[in-house]
Length: 312
Image 1 (cartoon, rainbow, N blue to C red):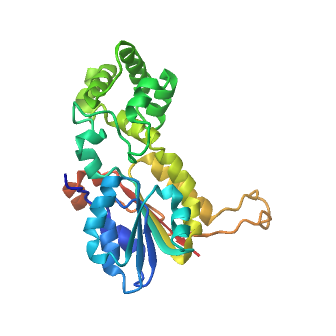
Image 2 (image 1 turned 120 degrees about the horizontal axis):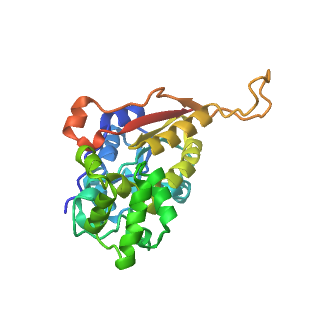
Image 3 (image 1 turned 90 degrees about the horizontal axis):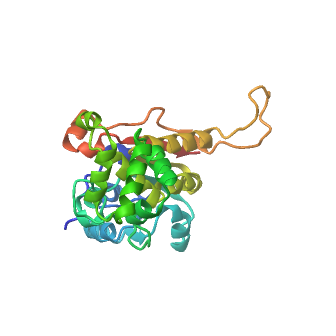
């Protein structure tokens, strides 16, 4: 199956990087290479792009898509949390721009056997972004305690029926292991009142999101990486991040703010004595969001937000 992924906020993101022809740029979530292709078009003879992704399918697809620029592009199979090591191994100390597109790719959602989608009944509960990992979504569903399932669905899925969903999952797995996306969807439906199901979106959406975030440690990886990425930027270099839900957006907003104003002195101190220096400025006071037109063309862009930080 062809790796398809419509790049969200494509030009807004690439424009935000102020691409210099001879600069070095890092795509931390290479995916199908849509954003990367746009960066490559703006690079000159000495420009470079490093593409990182943990998904083998993405690596293949992006390598094919970027083949006309292969002398400028280095593709590495890894998680962006390892960006410092990846760059060190390539002998790169600093870069001119880094960007992340944190959404699940359309390809991952549209390939049933990857188990990301609740729209397929017989798909295995997989959801691994890196298929080298041993743990799958099925392991979480069948082995986590009721309290941990409740906590994940409440915090990462922001689902007000989290407690009931967790209870129903535990009850169902006592009879037999839960193995497919369809089985899980039926259990979730049973935990949500019919009148709520009739008006909301798909009842499984929030739980599937929560399990995926937990399995792939998405929020941990993001929290851990942002400061390091800012440190890797040359002066004037930019970090641009596209998020798809409020928890990711909150992390990015908070880390950017702290890097802009890290001082921890009490507000009544006349001068700063903590010695923490600002690393740069937040370029986007409000996040950049997709146009009505883009949302019409690509429904998955609806919740996306772009925030940008510039190193000084």
